[in-house]
Length: 122
Image (cartoon, rainbow, N blue to C red; front, side, top):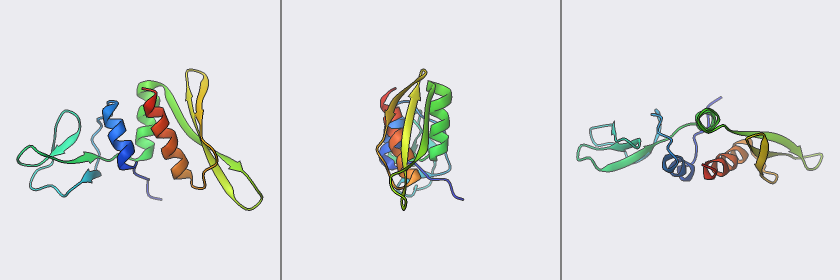
């Protein structure tokens, strides 16, 4: 099973909120000859110009939110009818639920929505 990378939009939001853990994956164009990072985790080419962002997995961002900001993001199954299974993401902070999504077909999409909402709390 391959881990799901967060979307580019979620990645930009995470960087704005202070996420700067180096990752093997990135968003952007192929590097010219360098893969150095600036202090914000943005990859630079030989001319120190932007070419990409680190791209963490959903589980790495989930762990960072939990350990650094005490925000828990998880998904729970929600059966709407007898045929289809749906998911709801839940964002939990300081002993209370602060956000839940409506029913979403795919687990990864529900988790992504929850991660985005959790980042807005920081």
